[in-house]
Image 1: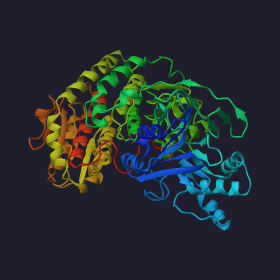
Image 2: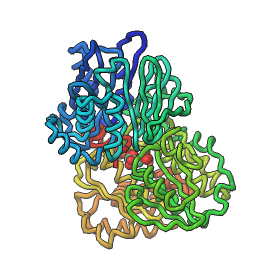
Image 3: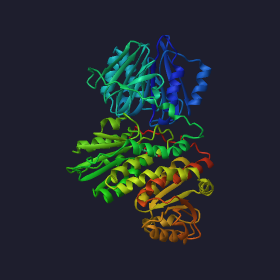
Image 4: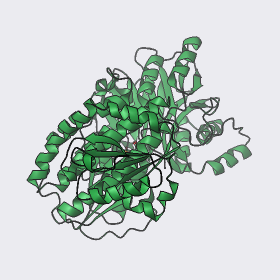
Amino acid sequence: MCGIIGIVGRDEEDVVVDLINGLERLEYRGYDSCGVAVVTGGSILRARAVGRLQNLKAKLDDSGLSGCVGIGHTRWATHGKATENNAHPIMTRDVAVVHNGIIENHKELRFDLQNDGYIFETDTDTEVAALFLQREMDRGASHRDAFRRLLKNIDGSYAFGVLFNALPNAIVAARHRSPLAVGLGRMTCVGSDAASMSGMCDKIIYLEDGDQAEISTNGVSFFDKNFQHVERKVHKMSDNWADSDKGKYPHYMLKEMMEQPNAIRKTILHNQMDHHILDGVSRILILACGTSYHAGMVARYWFEKFLKIPTNVEMASEYRYRSPIIEDGVMAIIVTQSGETIDTLEAMEHVRRNGCSRVAAIANVKNSAISRSADFVFYTEAGIEVGVASTKAFTAQLTILAEMAFHQHEFLLRELQNIPTLCEEILLSHDRLKEIAENIQKANSVVFLGRGALYPIALEGALKLKEISYIHAEGFASGEMKHGPIALVDDSVPVVCLCPHDELFDKNVSNIQEALARGSNIIVLSDSSGSPLLPAEVTKIILPRVQSELAPILYPVPLQLLAYYVALLRGADVDKPRNLAKSVTVE
Ligand code: F6R
């Protein structure tokens, strides 16, 4: 949430175009508004715009803004509406600040600063940081002392990039519970992620919590949370951003759905399960949010059935507000695409503080905060996922979880190898889904039903539809319908039912009959053996036959496609749905 980039150029080179390129790669973190600032001729100049980056580009074309040291920001609004006035960089006379995170004590600080005569011009929490720095410097502090006083006085989370008028060759940065890294190469950069600096840097240094960095034409210095000089590990930056253009596809989401067979194949190839991984584990605790949480929910069915290990799945955003009891022998598995979701990261730390000594992560982004702090990591080999709605990362997460669950079940592992081909079959012939999307696009509400390990897939189908098409959708366990939700159903509410020909088929058909009796328009996803047994009134989508345990990896694919086509018909921005961001780094 919110993307930060800062660049110190070489040889008086203008950095504005590189700032924009960096922001383009950060736009997935927020796209409410954006801006850049440069220090030039002893003063700071900035340009900001509401909405997408092209609006800022248009302004920059007109303004001719240039400079060889600059910062940029793409915003996901937390405090203050998405207006140009609230867009970052936030400036005072002598500083410009970009910020990701939330300053929790901003009200108190605002009050103090106002009492000292400082006037606020925005509704943002970030402005307290800018005015705090200004006040400290007005009182005679050096930029470094002012910055340190600021860090000592704020509560909450932050990644900061700051320009000072008085330091025309430098950017000062710091992080606490929000990601930030320094990149070295053709340019010296600071950025929210590696991608933002790719093409400019070939080495990356991740700041630790509480670290500050001073980046200048003379090099980079790091300081820890006690303001002591430190060295931090330098990593080679893997430049795989090149894989991430849309290629022949109109949207990243479509491209990423199409990449699923390969993502699953690569994930299987790169993750041979060590048979000892679960030695001594008496309980598994899965922590995740959103789509990744749904992957965890599926895993509970698998783990309890095949590993015979009691498994809990917890929404990471709620978990740390409980007082969990962690017995000996608990292994936590953190599931995350980005590896930096703050709720998930906090839950991971909470579980450690409460005595869990074995923490594994399943992550897609290499070297992310969660993968760096786990005891061991399994990487989904899905490649960069740009579309805000997670697709290929989800099926790749399920693949790793399936490998864990089935590691002593040769037959299921062999069946898992067939999933990419079955997935290809769906992706290559899905015109029927486009027709069904025509009906769904007019609905105000859609219900998704599934039983057993397909119940979480019903939740995922509903999440995909609501997040990109803005149609209200809810997933239910089929058997729960009669306990309340069936009251929602009438002929205006399409019901999508996941109904492979498995041991729960007959029960699912009974639930379908109950909905039909209430006039529902029912769409059933089944297979060639289930389809002839379904009531004639339903609309059928026939999927390839799959070993029932593996259906949760295959059945999300048509649901993703359905959501995609509904969103297209409604004219929604599929890759950047309103109000969302790909990487959720605020609580
Ligand atoms: C939905 C989606 C989100 C994420 C959630 C967790 O399509 O992508 O629900 O799954 O924000 O993100 P990660 O997996 O990066 O921790």
